[in-house]
Amino acid sequence: MTNNEVISDVFKNQQYMTTEQLSIAHEFQKMIETEYALCAREMKKANQAAVSKPISTNPDEKLSINYAGLEIDAIREYWFNRLVSLIQIIENRNTQLNKELAKKYLNNEQ
Image 1 (cartoon, rainbow, N blue to C red):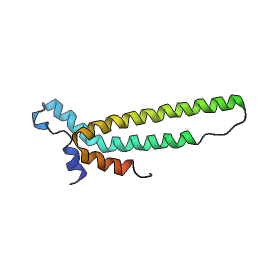
Image 2: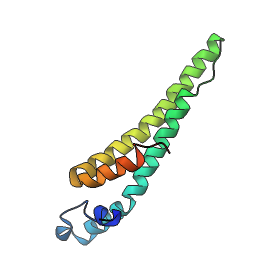
Image 3: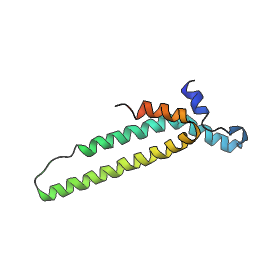
Image 4: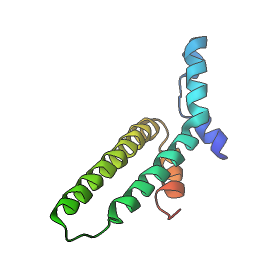
């Protein structure tokens, strides 16, 4: 089964959707893997940036460095939440696709 076949099986009741609903479902299905990859990549970048903080002995700089880390954490959390939302949609409708995308984008270093 190809990724396109798996992705096309995300929404099982497409035959009962209106034309507008079907259009929305198809557009969403087409972007699932791209969106998943984007979220995983950006989350990993933010994780790496969060641990690569400069070191300082100056108390004012230490505070600013900590605040900068918190700001990067907020960005990482944004990508994490976006990915979790996508995973929840996929997992409830196509567990095989969820496993394949996790293996491809979350279980390896990119």
